[in-house]
Length: 110
Image (cartoon, rainbow, N blue to C red; front, side, top):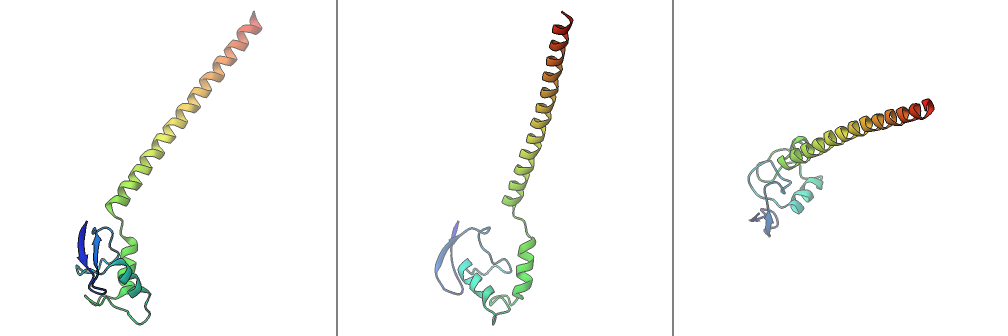
């Protein structure tokens, strides 16, 4: 986390690079000001780099952070483990049914 001064409101803010919503240029604009800029119909461009806001929003929607990739990877690993456990449970159930069937046959024969 680093302390940065917003180019719009001039407040000091503590942010990490992954927390900031504005990704178009290196100039810092806090998330509150950036949201206000995006929601202001009379502003179409980043006030610093002049990139079109709608293009920036679309680019940001397709970006996946390393944290998100790690989260998806962890979820995938958990799903694989669950599938393996379910397969094991199915096999154990089949073995138990076979054992019960064999016991029933033994009692019928005796």
